[in-house]
Length: 206
Image (cartoon, rainbow, N blue to C red; front, side):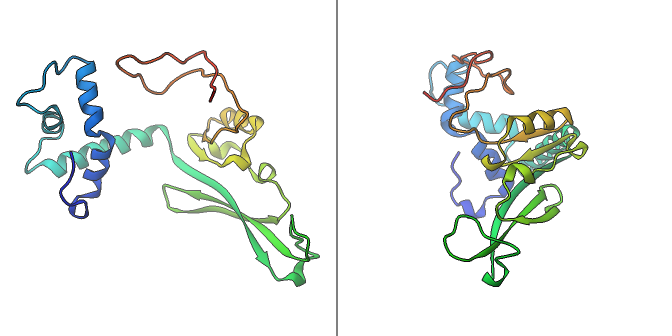
């Protein structure tokens, strides 16, 4: 399903369309036996018509499903919080108070750490640290993480921190370090067709 003019497409519609590309729909239809031979009926068009009901109620149908999805998501998670930090350079006259790291000349700098709420689109916490402070020491964990997803970068990657987040009833999303090879204990989605069961196996990029 390719819109004639993306600039005129409702953002909600565009998001739904991108979730179900044409190739995915056609391959799934063949794998599940919905389509044996393609003739006059296009399975992609059939999918959109039966799922969303094109016509006068098209947008209302999409928005209704979007609201239902968001309501169900909010029942499980209270918020998505993002933790990150950045370096801010200061005048060199402050070098004795806030010395910079990894520099051969006299320089000053601080590390600003911020926790942002995706639900309220506003910062929950802003703190200033010496530039030399590692991200692992900046990460503040506690009961406030319950039913919340914490999005962090590799600088905060620490197995002990992940275990603590879980103990507080929270969740986290992080990239894997290059040398990490964790055990897969579960999957969030069941795949149809010739899918491979990966539960109980080690993750490996080789």
